[in-house]
Amino acid sequence: MAGKKKSKNSTRNNKKKKSGGASASSGQTSFAHGQTLQQDASPLFNNIPQEMRDKIYDQVFAYTRLSHGEKPLGRINSVKVKPAPHGLALLRTCHRITDEIGDRWLRQVLFHFEDPLAMLDKLTALPHRVISQLRHVRVRAQSILLTWPDDDDDVHYTLHYGLKLIPGLKLDVLTVMGYMPGADVQYNTLNRLIRDSDGWKELRFLSSSSKLLGYEYKDYGFRGLTRDMRDLYLRKAQPADWQSVLNLRDGAETLPSVAIYRSKRPGGRSSSKSSLMANPANWEPFQQKDNIGNGRYGTVEDPNIMSTADERDKEVLVIARRGKGVDYQEKKNSRYIEGDIRREAPGKSWKEIRKMCIDDLDDMYADEDDWPFSDEEDPEPTIPDSYAHVDDYEWTALDFDDMA
Image (cartoon, rainbow, N blue to C red; front, side, top):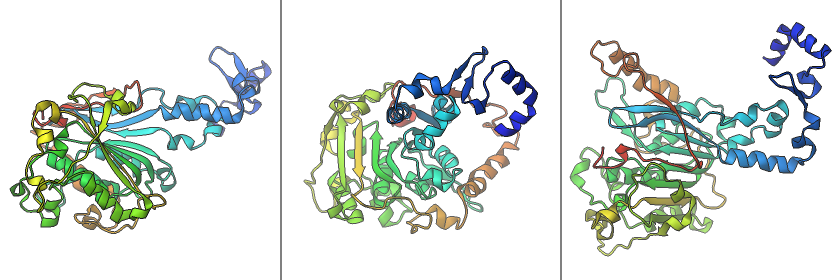
């Protein structure tokens, strides 16, 4: 495209050359006021060695976040989030900097998604070679709601099913923001991520409430599910159970690990929580012991957590790490798991599944005069992402049972 632009404006470019102006081939960068800067004379390239420039680039992108998706404001209302302005401005500075950076920025920036649909839309549109370079992703753990053709019932899929649709994923860190309502649903989401998902070396699961580890399991709430599926909602003493799961998956000799931390102070409802993630002093290790036995541990509340509001309102951070040397990359033809989306739509891409199970249904209702959620009648607002620290996070009303 640059070559075509140059030939189309060759007369203007020739005039610039005669008057001493810069061209792309001269190794100079042009500025709006007619001033030029010789790249070879720039202090950046002349005085700073390549190794140091690389560290500067790495530092910039390590503190860059690219956000997408619909942030929930309530059960119905939401707001679309787009990346903060100038997040990738360094890539547009000049050709030489762009060439020096190459694709390394993909391995350094944090890709944040307000919902799993946004994650699937964005990542599955990328070629395999790009997906395999991503290292840091954060996503809210809403369920993926699909309505299959000839079926009136909506099906809720937890996040681990979505990861199976992104072959090539090989993250250093996957951060998941737990999503209410329902501590049992949130527990199941984390349980399935540890048991069945790949694509991450380290999983960080954040919850706005300690109810995740303290709720009372009620079997009657899961009628229609198989016994194996229902048992995934039954709390067990953690992190010992999750540790045993990873030991079986990866081999105890590879030294996988699971650790749980709770915030030292209650209350996860303030808007910005960057300090909790950035400062280990805000967290304290947490472990549970099964003092009941006979598989009844999760059938009663954990009194250490559920006895007071202050204890319930403490945030939780679970960190799971895969074993050393384990191949954790998500594979294209990985085995099906129970309830797998791919089994329902064999050979279909996410784009095809979305059209069949979401978009076609939306189009059908949008044609009706009484459809209250039409984009044309009530366009969704869009806001740019804003953060002081790349790990800033914000809970929404739906992240708390009593506010949902």
